Length: 183
Image (cartoon, rainbow, N blue to C red):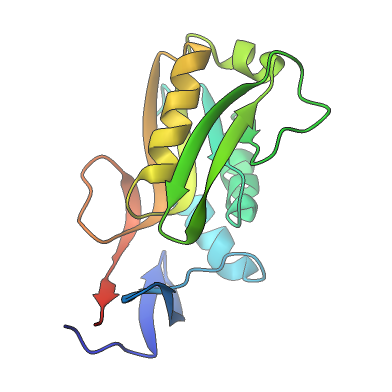
């Protein structure tokens, strides 16, 4: 068992923050990275991720969620087109709508991601960067990768502000955050 701090300090591209540590599941505590409402951190992280974007990436895909301000910065800085996978089947998604299930450390229930036919067609045969704020268990990323495979995406890479839990060599990340376990 680890002592659970009230906050953890991070520094991303020269911007420091104290993240509140919250319990997200029984006995599992993490520092909560909130980009919404923090334009300085979002800007710094987005610009740094844009600098690390491989030159051969064609599209950015982001799972629907709290990291959307990050997408704006990375897209502005790279000039790449972007697609947002939706957590609900929206009426404006062109048929056929593709769906894949997902789970994540911060979501207690199963959810799904959706893409419409027009976005799926635009991604076909492309190299795609999946962008998110934090990659933990990888459940969300695996679901998005499965969705992109249905679209015929040629290759994916994963980029995030941070990873947490086990170190991940499969993610281009700016930081690594500890997961704290209690009884």
